[in-house]
Image (cartoon, rainbow, N blue to C red):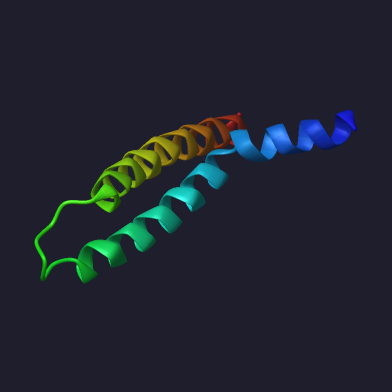
Length: 76
């Protein structure tokens, strides 16, 4: 049971998972925004879109930082 909980924790804390979830939310909310262009109303999908962009940027920063550390260690 503890192994399963550790795996779940590792999966949920992964920047790759956060990036993937951000992309999924960005695409789905972007589609909702596109479909609501005719009515010119602001809905929850606009907030989800902004949050998705922030999630993608945050996860990208973590991924780039990790790759940079890996490359520095590989050079040594």
